[in-house]
Image (cartoon, rainbow, N blue to C red; front, side):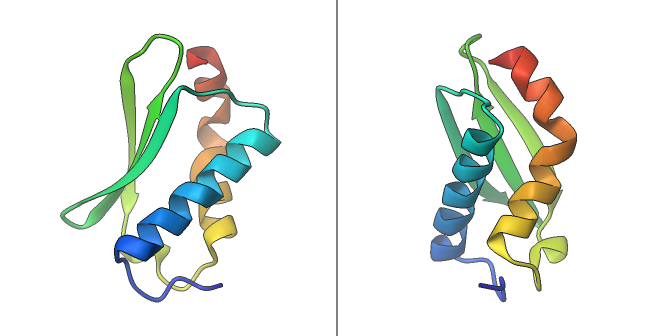
Length: 86
């Protein structure tokens, strides 16, 4: 399913896609979330340190790609860092 707009349902589906990618890569977490802020989307990650870490990317870059592809492209570069936090 290709992302055509950013709305509440899109954010919920993105969060599910991010959960799947984290589980596939064996990255534990306490809580995760996706949020909107102006023209950016935020990935919120809470690991064992119980602090919320924020990773941002452009909403515009999210349009026209699938949920899984977006989750992979955002998470793949930061998975080593997330493992240190988990």
